[in-house]
Length: 250
View 1 (cartoon, rainbow, N blue to C red):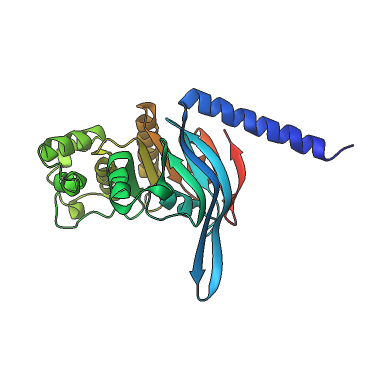
View 2 (view 1 turned 90 degrees about the vertical axis):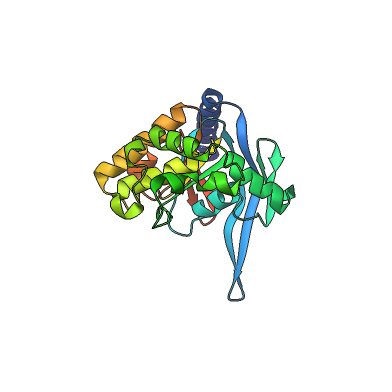
C-alpha cells in the first residue's frame, strides 16, 4: 500500500476543516506567508519561527499550543506588532506589518489589538477604572475615557469594582480588569498569552467563558496556552513544535 496516500487524505481532511472554520468565521483577517523569526543569542542563532504559513479568519477563536520555546508566543508577538519578522510576510486586514513604520505600528496596536497577559500588568496604586482608561490616554483619546472605561468594566462584569485598586481585587478580578483594559479601544483582535496560568480552576472557567462570549460578539480571540483543556475550548487549535506548525485542527 502506498504510505503517502493516507497522509494525503489526512492533509485534505485538515485543509477541509480549516476552510470550513474560516468560512464560518469570516474572511481571512491574518495571513502569514513563510514567516520566520530568528534571534541571535550568545553568538548562536535561535530559529523561533520557521516558514510558518497560515490564515486566521475574522471572528475565529483560536488556541495556539506547544511546549515552552516552540514559537507560540513569538507568533503572538508578531501579530501584536511587538516584534518584527526576520523574513516572510505577515498581513493583518490588508496591511503588511513589515512595511509599516513605528508610528503606523503604534496606531495598529492601539486600534486593532487588545493584549491580555498572565501577570495582569496593572498599575498597583491606581483604581480599576483608571487602569482600564490608560490605553485611551496613550492614544490621546481622553475625552470620554472614564465613561468608556466604565462601560468596558461593565462588559466584563466588574463595574461595581471600578474604584478598587488591584490589591483589593482577587486574581480573577484583576484579570478581568486587564481584559477590560484590552477591550476599551474596541479592538478587532484579542491576544491572550497564558491568561489563566496564575488562576485557580474556578476562575479559569470564568475567564474562558468570558473569552467565548467576546468571540461570539465578533472579536477574533487568539489564546496562547500550554494547557490542553483550555485549548480544547477554542474552535480551532494550532500546535507548534520547534518553530513550526505541526498540527492545525478545528
